[in-house]
Image (cartoon, rainbow, N blue to C red; front, side, top):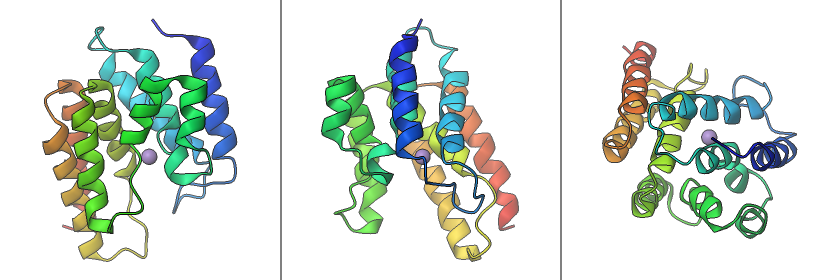
Length: 179
Ligand SMILES: [Mn+2]
């Protein structure tokens, strides 16, 4: 099914790396976002036993570690191997690019990997992030976040119906924040 020791190692790394970080606007431990993403992904992935659950769960736990903390991709590769490092890398935005290119770039790297587990995780990530917008956001920012979610779903769809249905439902519910 999955390797518990490997997953516990990823959970420990994520817990240490995100220790001082909170979810923006909620001020709750960031690990709540990370494990929420894994929960969403796993719920969908259990409909397809051909998926690699080690890859899915480890990349889910580590998906924001390189983007948001000082942990390097090299150390992920050393500890978890190349496949997991490649998955985390595709889920990490390239901060050297202009803002508007960062999401298209990440999605094209996810598609190039051809690992459905990573498509599922990106959709699960947006599912978890489609919560009540920050109070300082204006209507335009909220609409843009909605449109970006639609773009993520349309770009990555075709790998897992349960995940796609779940994201579509979260997107539909998000409309209440600007309509
Ligand atoms: Mn995330």
